[in-house]
Image (cartoon, rainbow, N blue to C red; front, side, top):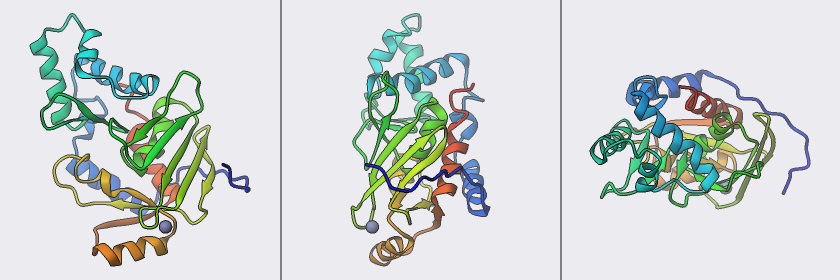
Length: 236
Ligand SMILES: [Zn+2]
């Protein structure tokens, strides 16, 4: 599926993206998520996780990861996994046995399916609309995003080539940038950062569910946030 028009949308910062990113800096441990404040061992495992996920088309299982880091004792390995969970670089399930999220990737089905234009990568779900838009910057691959309007379920399609959006459907697509942080991104923010066919569909949805705190983002603004949150994740 392709839209007719030839477009090139680049990430575009704005006042809204500044406020949202600043808010994330205040509420999340971005230094840890970007690896800056993590130990080498913690970063090795974080890298392994994020780079293996698109290859496997799923987030690797905890013992599968340990199998690749056999020099680490069970205890040390467990501490690292728990630390990555504590800083919200990953999100473990309640029994702490499975990695449900390794941002930007989701181990569970979401509305946002990512298809890579790279033979060695399999499709995977993204946690939210902004995470989906950040993936090409992190893994250096062209992608297609298949999603839907959170209000009416209408099909959403985005193609990213060379870190530019080359196709977007529908044309009036916006992203709701939600800002009510509670515990970890997986349980509070991500479920609420979604695509809407148009500003009007967002407004209709908000009328139904009640006023929310956040911003309506144009696609180029959400794209910019995706870039900010993910382009440096695998650099440290
Ligand atoms: Zn809609």
